[in-house]
Image (cartoon, rainbow, N blue to C red):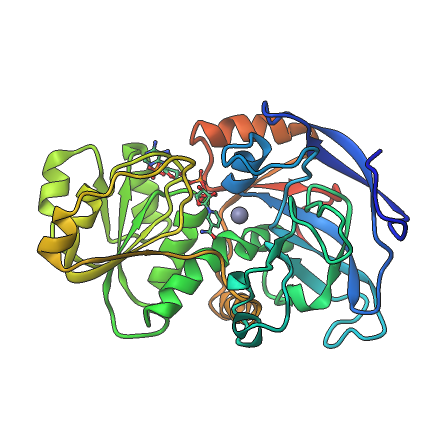
Length: 360
Ligand code: NAP
Ligand code: ZN
């Protein structure tokens, strides 16, 4: 059992990786008592983000083992501390990537906690009390209420879980570029995975023309028919890439693996912007010419702030947007990891942590 700080008295059953193979095995550990500003959540579902796989395998070289991944968490509040505002026992709650921040800097004060330089994540982070944070591949979590959101009644708890990371990560760049409920634009989504499929849904819900740029021709039919994509470009097809040049106002790149940025940048109109949210372990190739000839901008973004996360959840409730998921049992996490590594999921695995049916 893991060593913890003295007030970590609650024994929790979870699942962890212990070394770079990333293999997940049952793991029992301790969480802190519910403090004055904490809520305790019985976890029902947790999405499997590609970040979980990167971190379990130490792709980014920053993993502290054992690691209990999981930052797409939905569940029911079972305890509230006496200083908690806005939450009560029985509430449907969600936790994403953030566990703590300084609460005092310009970013925290404007609810861009995700850019606080003392930001700590839901797993593989260090909480205020010095303990290592453990994520949602576990039965229960204690979280400071300032990093918890409400899950609208209209959303199913399983299909809503991936919104907590995949959803907010693609929502924030759209919002930053005035693409929420704004005049129709042509937007591109690179990589039709967990993040990408939510981006397509948002793009369509907000009235845009959406083109998927993919390495998987097999995803075209569903992208068009089920997700409503207007265009589909196979990135390895030179004819399609040529025809797509200078057609898009905005591109969101969600790719988890190495890929060149030049050909994708060419798809942007002059003055277009591409936001990278995918996080491959190695540096990406970025040629100067597509940037300078098109006066194009390339930038990045990490998840989103707490206020925006609640705003996104509420909009998903309003538009009835949730994720296309495949629910797996905790015993099958390794199988899900292997399939995710092989790009074999449409479009997000969600772990049924509590062993419930999916109709909560
Ligand atoms: P995912 O479900 O595996 O989707 C990634 C997609 O990338 C795949 O579906 C695939 O789409 C495409 N792809 C895979 N291998 C490729 C290759 N070799 N070349 C080109 N495209 C390839 O992963 P995810 O959970 O959406 O996460 C995507 C990335 O975002 C990960 O790196 C993750 O760590 C990162 N992330 C970042 C943030 C943030 O805050 N910035 C938040 C969450 C996740 P096609 O089959 O359509 O090509
Ligand atoms: Zn994630």
